[in-house]
Length: 163
Image (cartoon, rainbow, N blue to C red):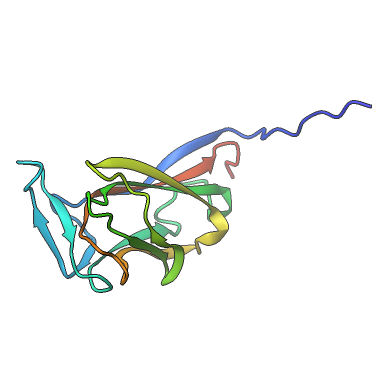
């Protein structure tokens, strides 16, 4: 007997929920963070230098005003967090939290020599309807500084779910 492989039949669209460019004005909150362009003249970035004390917190809105008309939170199928960052040659370690709960504790795999984008995918169930807070914090055990350029937060939206 042959079994047909299950496939995802709905169409998905990426919805931009937030785009934080930390070199310029941003609605994020910063704790013990400085701005520099030392290694990227004219293209500033944030430097997190205090282990356990440097952090950037960003809002991730998943309320009715954040989602296109005719869709609801239940129509979101997942969230992608795209981080452009660098752990530097001294191997910085960061914690990534959502609503003060760890998504990743002691993350060590950011690009080491220059900025690079990495995408982290999470099921929508990790996020609550309404306001969420994403925090990137220099871990208490970090031996080095961490550079953060920008963060994009995207939602995967089931476009077949129009109400």
